[in-house]
Structure formats: C-alpha cells, structure tokens
Length: 534
Image (tube, rainbow, N blue to C red; front, top):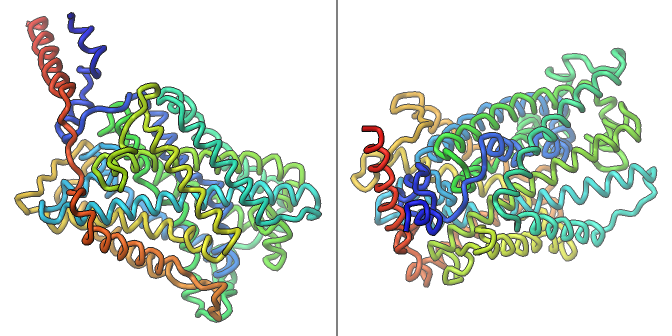
C-alpha cells in the first residue's frame, strides 16, 4: 500500500493541527474545513450584534435610562475584552472541541481535575443550552412582533404561538447542523456580512431619516439628563448598572469558536484570533449602534410601544412601517445565525463531555456519524434538550425566564474557573502550561488581564442576581442565581454519589490503532520530505 493510500484510510498525516491534537491526547475526529473567514464569521455570529441588542435593548433603556445604555455598553465591552483575551490565550494553547472544559484538566493538578472538569463542564453546557433556548425564544418573539406591527397591533400573540414557532425553528436548526462540515463552513462564511451589514444599514437609515430637530442632545445620550430610574425602588446607581445586562448577554459564549477548533485549519492561530477580533469589533460597533439608537429614539414615554420592542419601535418611527419591517427581516436572520452557531458549538461540547464519560450515556453521544463525520447524536440531543426550557413557558413563564436569564452567568463562571486555576496552579508540577501562538506573555499584562476579567465576572454575577424591578414579587423575582447555584450543588452531589466512578476528568482517547498509524505515517512523511530536500 502506498503512502497516499495509507492517508486515505486514516487522517491527513501532514496536518500540523492533527499532530498537535494527538500531542494533547486526542485523535482527530473531524474534517478541518473551516477557513479563516468562516471562523471569524462564526465568532461574530455567535454574538449576533444587532439581533442581540434588539432583544436586550429594553432592559437598560427602561430601567436605567438612555445614558445607562451608552455608558454601560462601553464599560462592559472593555471588561469583556479582558475576558475574551484571556479565553483566546487558553484556546490557543489547547485547541480542542471541549474548549475551556478540556483545558481545565491541563491547568489543574491531577487530584482536582475530575472535580474541576465536572463543574466546568456542567456550567458550560447549562449556559449554552440556556443561550440557545433563550435566543431562539427571542427570535420567535421578534418574528411575531413584526407580525403585530404589520397588522397595526391587531394580532394576538399567545404563548402557544410563541412556543410553537420556537420549537419549529429549533427543528430547522437541528436539520441544518446535521450537514457535513464542508457545508456548515460554506454556510457560515456569509453570516458575518449579514450581521455587520444589517448593523451599518440600521445606523445609516436612522441618522438619515431623523430630522436634526428631533435628535436628542448629548446630555440626554451621555449626561445626567439620560439617567432615568424606572426600577420602582432601586437607587439610581443600581438602576444605572442594570444597563450592563445587555452588553454582558450579547458579548458572551466567546468559547463557542473553541468548540469548533477541531474543524478549523491552523486552529491554534485562527480560533483565538477570531475570538479577539470578534470581541473588539462587537464592542466598538455595538457602542456606535447603541448611541445612534438613543439619539434617534424619540420620546422615552412612547417606548417600548405596542410591539413590546423599543428597538423595533424606533425603526418604525424613523423608517416607516414598511422600511422597518424590511430591516427587521435581516435582524431576525442575524438572530437565526446566532442559534445556528450556538447549537453547532454546544453539540461539540456535549460530544466532548460524553467522550469523557461525563454524561450518563456510556459515551453514546461521544460518537461521530460515519456519513457526515459530525456528532449527529450530540446535535439532536442538544436540539431536543434546548426545546425543554421554551416548553416551560406554557406552564410557567417565570420558570422559563429564570432559565433564560442564567445564560451569561453560567457561561462566564465556566470561563473564569480555568483562568483562575491557571494563575493559582501555574507553578504546580502537574500543570504544564505551554503557551500557544496567541500569548499575552508571562508579565504584568497577562496577569492584569486575567485578574480584571475574574473580578469583573464576579461583580457582574451579582448584578445578574438582582431582581430588576421593585417591590419584589413571585412574578418578578430573579431566580437565575438560585438555579445556577442549585445546578452546581446538584452536580457536586451527583459526582459524590456515583459519577466519580465513571468520570475521571477530561481524558485521552488515544487507544485506537488508527492513532498509532497517524503518528507513524506522519513521521514517515516527514522523513521522506527531508530526504527529498537533501
């Protein structure tokens, strides 16, 4: 058998990414067909700039006022930059589909690996599932809000209609994610152009269609005139800080790009670079969009209007009903792309966690389809489980909203644990952090960045935990912190009672003969190349 025939029966033996993956303890299981453009597009799309702002714009505007929208966005974006850079650094060192969950094993002493991996894995999965479900639910509401606008408010939006549309959209995303990697890569390439293009069109249309006499003054956008406490009881400082909820919810799920790193070419370079670029771009362009929305927003007392979406009402005010609905179609498409990429990333996390026996499935979801070479079982597991929080809305909207609201809290906590472990255990003999191409250095810059992102995340989690309206009742209570802590406690109890018997932390799967062939044939190829050069 020739060398080329051997390669066709195994994996690409000349792929440096696959060799690096073997060095990290994992056999290559995916085809690397995501280019740099597709990877950057994926990173931008997971944040869904204009659609995420559209679904969260009400919160800062109606709680803290216009100035809360503008200042909290840039403050939160700067802090999210430190978290994104810290995550990118770890992803560059450990580019596997398990993301920070898998990296946690490399950054923790052996005796703590299983417990740390267990908590990080479940927090990450919980946050991703909640993110998929909440974004899809938001998309269903956005579509029905457009219907309401189109029918001049003469349309009854019921829980049944919302949940039905929500479930149907998730089924479509499950089908799309069942495509082979090459098709997913081609599909993803265009996401970034729709995302950013729609954002810039909104900015241009709002500025062009708003008369100068109706534009708000700088004091309203940036000054004390724009601080309007509508929480019903919180002091003005807390009301102002509720503006952070929009930016933190938008700029999260950074590690989604890490979860596709085994499908990315030159992953140690491309994945962290995409995260870094997307965080900076989303932060800056998002701030510009928020400023323009406030400048052109009209009277605050008219918002959020009959549709329940202040963002959509501003578009209708300035672009007219027809123009607003045309733009809104593309905002909805952007939200559709967010769920598409989020489900893609989450399915790879389920795959990795199952592969490590972290799920009670005996590794069932940790297998790839022989046809598509993608984890179809994990994809449909993710799809079905993501439907469940939305179905709760039929029985208890409070419970559904509680699960939706924990997205950023659960994800951000799962990020700072490995970052914290890296700093605490960096001199431990079991921890051998080998920096990747994206590295902030061993000096004060990296340490300061890590410290700031950990401190900020803990601070924001406190804001996430507060009820946004006073007085607090059973209907407006914020249950996000209760559910997050409850999940952590239940996961720990489960681990102690039985899971420790089958879960020992992220573990190597280099046990197939094919892996030995990869290494052997790869060395043969290198030696042959050296002989040719000599």
